[in-house]
Each structure stands twice: as structure tokens, then as C-alpha cells.
Image (tube, rainbow, N blue to C red; front, side, top):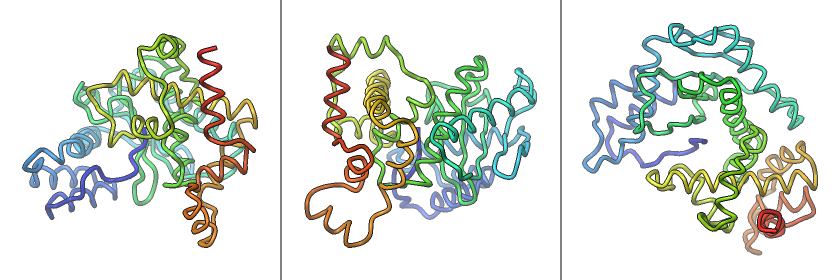
Amino acid sequence: MVIGYRRVPPSRIEFGVALRLYDEDRVTEAYNAALDAGLGEEGEYALWFRQIEAEAVTRARSTVRKIDDYLEVEFIPAEAWMGVDSLTGLAQGSIQAVCDRLAWKSQARTRVTVLAKDVDTPFATNPDGYCVRKNEFFKICIPAYVLEDEVELSAAISHEYVHVVSMLTGGEYVEPWFDEGVAVHLAGERDDEILQEIRLGRWPWLSPRELNFKVRSDEADFEDADSVLAAYQQAGLVVGEVVSVVGEPALLKVFERSQKHSFWRMLLLTATGTTAFDSALKSVTGKSKPWFFEQARRRLFG
């Protein structure tokens, strides 16, 4: 899950201060500012408050280990039962695997943070983990329960690192369903049981617009988590169709071409009702977005 923009515009100066400190990863100070600001008259800041709180509680007891010039791992030593070397090695290996499969040669300053067990609660803002862009680096936050399974931990880090690549190379032009679908695909998170539920009609097959809405964390219904999981699986299935046509490195090309348009090109796309992402997908694959959705639907339903 990627956190790319604010859920609510800060209408109170105090919470604006908290968010600015949070962007600097001064999370303890951000938490104090958030406490002063409160949750808002209608609780409009609750989601951000919980996210800041989770990182601040973790920071109070954590250690940051630098792996190389681009990667740091933050963890609480007493809670890293799998061993620090295993944790840092797994983080580094998971990130490198994503880079290799996408044939991405660049690097991005990234901190992988394993959140404190104290904040691993049902009301956590993003209970399965998230990626957020700080001022100086990207931060991947992983819930403590994931440490219980190395395969799941690797998948979680891989999933979130895809968002790092997407934000750096495609930015806001990449449609959410594609961003999450690539993450599901490269993390190996395909769930045949959920796909079977879609096939049997428990969850509807969504259009691109519906899928974008469902996977976007800021707009999805958090009380309907199962349907969101189904949407992620559909997105992964459609991306699998893209991979079957052009291979995994082409996913990076779609990211990159989504934002590499001149002013005049963007003007033309707008005039013709085509998005930058649709143009990028078509230019890389030779196929349209509706075509991939239909191919994935036919593969699933037979």
C-alpha cells in the first residue's frame, strides 16, 4: 500500500506542523505536535494521527542499522526474534530481487522499519504495511506480525519497494490498479482462493475505474477489507497478462513512459481523452488497457 498524498488538507496550523515534521521523519516531534492538534472536530486527522503515533512509538525503542549507501533497516532489537543479520539480509535481498526483475539500475534511499508490536492493532491505519515518501528517503513500514514468517516478510518488503520504484519513475501518472498489480505480481502474492471467490461471484469483476477506487487506500472502505483484497488480486491478475505479453522489465518501461510526455503531448492526450498512463501502456505493449482487462477476465472465468 502506498501513501502518496494527504487524506485531508490540514485546516489547523498545529496539524500542519505535525505533517511537516513527519515528512522530515522527526516522528517523535511530529507525534507531540499531533497530540497538541488533536484529531479534528470530526476525527478527520485520526488516520494520520495513528500512523504518526505508530512510527513514534517504534522510534522510542528502535535501532537503525545502515546496510549500504541506499538502505537502512530500523527495528526494535528485543522484538527482532529472527535475528538482526537475517532481518537485514532478507530486506536487502528482497529489494534487490525487485530491481533485478524490473531491470532497474538506479537506487533509492530507503529505510525499512519494522513497527513495534504495541501498534500492531486492528485499528492501525495500514495494518498490512505501507510505503511513504519522506523528504530525504522512502520509508517502508512493516507490521511486527510479519516477522513470524520469512516468506511473508520478504513479500511485504518486495510489495512496498515496488511503490518506491513506481513513485520515482512514474509518479502520479501511474494508475493505482497498475501500481498495486505490479506489487502483487512481483511479491508473489497471488491468492487462488480469493480469485476463486471472484470467479464464483462473491466479488465483482471491476472496471479499471472501479479498481482504481478500490485499491486507493485513501478512498477505499476500510470496513470492507475483504473486497479490497479481492481488488488487489484482480489487479495482480491483469498485470500478469501484461507480463505474459512483454515480460517483467517492460513494467518499468510503463512506469517511466507514464510521465515522460512533453507539454504538447499531454495537451494532445487530454484533448483526445487519453491518459498518460494509457498512452504509456499502449506504446510499451502494443495493447490497450481494456484488452488486458478482458484477457484477464477470460482467463479467470474461462
